[in-house]
Image (cartoon, rainbow, N blue to C red; front, side, top):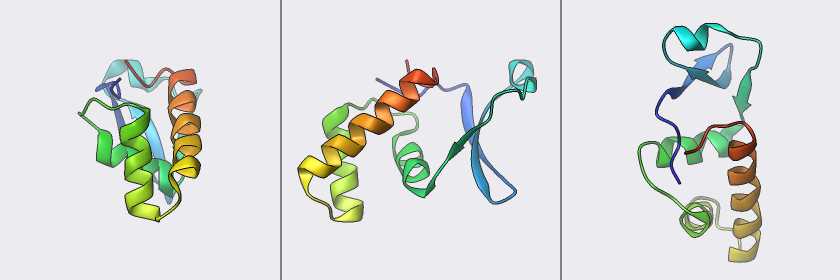
Length: 88
């Protein structure tokens, strides 16, 4: 899977906010805010193909958690991105 290229993260009022580029992004009725961990993963994976294992590996390397914890967190992150329509 891959993050949709039409979405970008911008810093607004101290928050990392996902926005759609261009005229389609003018509808601001739905704001997607990323916490620091989600922002780290977004920045690392933008423009790349990824899967559950590659996301979990980034979490293990960056945060030093056990693989089973990282896999659960990676699944939750991917599931949430999919629910919001941010992946292809």
